[in-house]
Length: 237
Image (cartoon, rainbow, N blue to C red; front, side):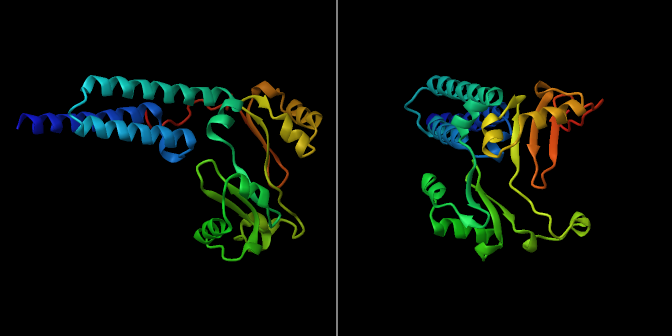
């Protein structure tokens, strides 16, 4: 009977530890299962299961292991926030599978994605004809994001006032975490002087920008570290 009671309390402890660890690691782990999140989740789940049922191993050893794994995962998350290069290596980066309506076979080979898998993902988005697709991107979490060609998109109020000849291009990230992404500037022939001029108009520098992207319509979208909000909303407080 004592063994059953012991297992009962170990199971409760394992469940409680997972809840605490999930809170420490944050919502990112729940929303986007990247490589790092996948490995962390599998490891923690396996360790928690052993804590609950494997009475031959001391509980203290499990708690130490859980603490170490949590610290490593938390450290990696912090490093990913501070360094774009580290984030790119840890979580990989999105892969374009369709550009301008054309399938990029080499990119599909890189991520080992078959045509059957691509077509299935498109059908899940109610796209049964690949001709409708302008861009398709495989995200870090394995989900497919799709931008349809203009004639197949739902009409918005902006569309009614836009010229029928206007086109949309793939968005280009120019600044991330206050750092200029020079490879994107070079690859897409975006002038750094043009970007700096746009920032000068707003009396800002590159260091002031948290995120800058040239949108699908060619418009420069900027988000600064200082948002100028006196009382930003935080629903958890």
